[in-house]
Amino acid sequence: MSTESVKRAGRPKDPSKRRAILEAASELFLQGDFDRVTMDEIANRAGVSKLTVYSHFGEKDVLFAEAVRQFADTFLSPSMTDIAEGLPLEEALYRIASNYYQALMTSQAILGMRMAISHRVQLTPLPSLIWREGPVRVAHSMAQWLAQRPDLDPEDPAEAADLLMAMIRGQEHQAALFGQIPEQDPQRVEQRLRRVVRLFARAFARQEV
Image (cartoon, rainbow, N blue to C red):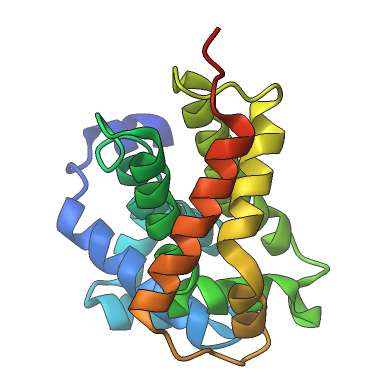
């Protein structure tokens, strides 16, 4: 019997174990050097066997890629659909901006970005993977949403998305990457983001004829 036949005949994968493995892997990847994290450590942290880890993901690079995708998925869909659906333009933009900013400033996002730009991983596929599965996916999703809004008229949705995301990040995100985590004042953050969306709306709102 072929290996493929054996795989098809096996037990269905347990979603709860998959979630536990992803959570454990994400924690370990962010705590230290990717190269030093072993599948044994991931299995122990998740409370499963190493065979189960390999059964779900095959190899460490695949597991890491899935952990990055999962993090991006936590705010891609809600920010572009449910959060902004049916709202006036500026309020919809504010909800998206706030959601994006909060995701960027999480410890997971900051640590992941630092790991991607650190010298010890520059010769590995990891920076490219993080870039593709994180920032590039978010930018593409943002551009699609902007292009579909009937009250917006960006000549180049991708460029408009890039401008919006850059304004949302601001200097605070750059400071966080350098370890200078600013004290978050929710009121001040909201005021800044509302100014950002007002500027963006003025630049790209569709002009009535």
